[in-house]
Image (cartoon, rainbow, N blue to C red):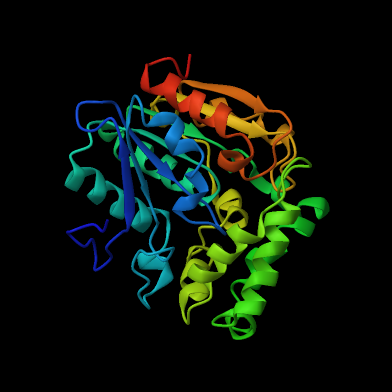
Length: 294
């Protein structure tokens, strides 16, 4: 399905499954380099008791991919505006919003700027509180790609070239995952089908070109006043084997969230909805029942 009313010219594609109107609403936000199929194992676990909506973000999957100024149309605030528009169009009443990777940042932006719309958050890294630790040598060995995405050389080498897209995405899906997970060739086939068309890869990295990546965001972050912290009850799911976000970076969550609980995803890597779908779904179910952020 596609959003009927465009927001700043962008219409989102989405899946809607589950118990329908009247059931608790759940909104699941994917990461890079993925799309809404990141939640293909989580959504069925929620559908018996929740109204589950899973969109492709701006510039991803089957959603619109316009050539536009990234800083205006692809940053966290712009992505949040599209999700807020979808919440209104579908009549979702204070959904639980869950996300990982860039989906986590967008969920946080909605909860910070429109707390009236959010029942609770279930999020995996990145989270605020990293600060200048992101400049440590070991961290920079992992975050090189964010600087690369700013170079025109990047889309010149990759955009519209299926073999290059496949090789590039395979690196991240292999390197960022935990020891018990391996991306399938079928899933790579799907990702190539949505990332390899001309302009699609470039649209996907507009998030980083907007300055919304973790390096730029972490260096710019400031601790808010206590009454300006994110108020929504928040469950933080922190993987054990995410090379981007080591667990010791979870030590400042309380500086940014008023009611957060931290749960470890032992054995999992960066792709938490696919590597730990049962635990991810259980956290969302608990949040919908008012049992998060205690």
